[in-house]
Image 1 (cartoon, rainbow, N blue to C red):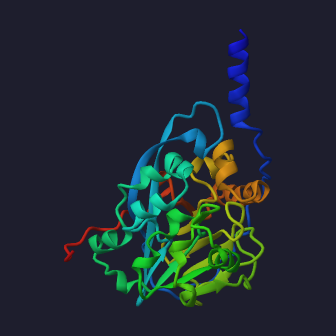
Image 2: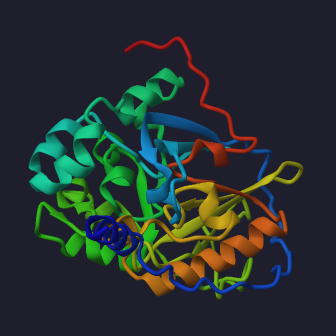
Image 3: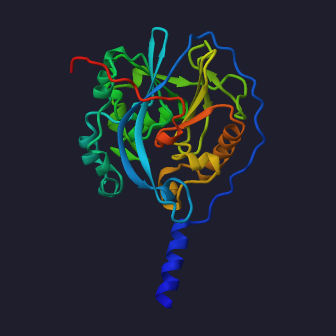
Length: 311
């Protein structure tokens, strides 16, 4: 009896008390005009692995989900734009340089991942053709391919850029300093000087044509950013990075599992506030919310076509 009680208590502690997620009314859907031609994003899949859904969405015995490691491609006129830079060819080396507990808990699973340059070439895109990378945040599994993109401008929130360039430890707060070495001159800091959008206090028209609007969605990291992608006649997608790992996060809404959230999220209260905003957007069907780690959220968002290209 005592052992059963102790086991139950341990499980309850591991689940933790869920943070309060505020519920907001549907935001006013006043959309910025876009002068861009039609755009169809597509997904690059570095890796998929089985993961406990209770890590992605707090709750009892949820089963598993196929955890994706991904990047996304947008073709905007003469621009080739990525949302995040996923995992690179050097991922095994990066994992080896990380702390032992990281390798045991997360990193070793990423060793078989397909690198960004290889995936781009399979989709008929040379890495040199990528003009911009829009980073949702600076964590290792979103920046691993930056070094494979020699001509790309790196767009990220000022807080994320400052933290990335100030980091001296090889691995800290989910980020790897080697991913940003030598790249300071190619970083463009986002300043959120545009009007409120989708319930968020401010925004930024990234290219000045309404095709991609950045909004601050802090919590997972201090400067976490989401990107609204829209075309005149097509659907709208809001790429939310890791604000939620799985669709349950913004649909129910619910926080990440206690241990996972404690390790991965910078600020639990900010994360909860962001989830509340995202839930209101999803419930009102104002945009397709796209997470980086759950392909179930990739609505009207195909995998990038495989082209016959030279290796």
